[in-house]
Length: 341
Ligand code: SF4
Image 1 (cartoon, rainbow, N blue to C red):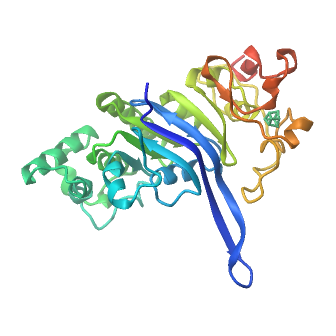
Image 2: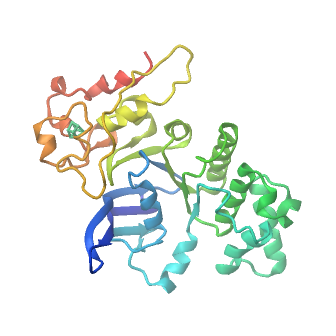
Image 3: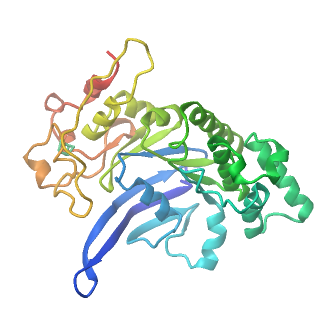
């Protein structure tokens, strides 16, 4: 199957300027060689602690800034080096829903104009009647009353605003929506409603979703596959069930150990990581996780582990998987140590 989106060795290094002449003194290695793909109609979640580079990946895909290097291929066409005129129709196909529903909508525009803007920009409506028809259908799709279209953003709750943000993304008729912490700012009950809405829309419209989130409990509920990021790199990729059942990277194991288990009486064995995430200005040599990894050994401090294929299409970047199973705490069923007892 051909991927809808393919990201190949994406890097984004932000220069830091300083000194007497304002020259580049260092770089923030925000994203440092990230590769993944998303199929049509699939949800891939990009997860990790704050500052791991996951939102920078989303912004790089939207070409909100130039890439340092790497390729972004949308439906077989490279878009990372496209000129603005050629990029324009491709932009329509990849839309975004941002985290903060209070700042992502222009307070001086009525909902009608917010939703009409992408339709006009991409020349999608045949005439004004078609435009009105599209606007009414968008309100239906996000389950808001049609007559609310003449209201201003401040007249809506956070959850309703996020529905408007989703309607604005849908207005461009995209193939892929990047949801950048799209439910993180919402109350728990509203969060569930918005996630359910996204899932319904995905089924109805065949949308692909890149769901960027630090919230693994939400991710477990709604994704097909998960990519785990740590300090600018992807350290593990797997189908949701495989990743949650038996993680193959010590960082994923620690992240999952903090996710509450729904069954009463069940508990996960908590893995507490020592120290903070190192600075992306000066990431550790070798495995970037070695300063916090409970299993680190000599090789980890000097040699960077590649993301390599394990059984069942599971990918993980950890030297432990070069060891015999008996010496690998994450081999086989061992990752289930973090599962409910
Ligand atoms: Fe830990 Fe070494 Fe694996 Fe990195 S390569 S996750 S330090 S065991």
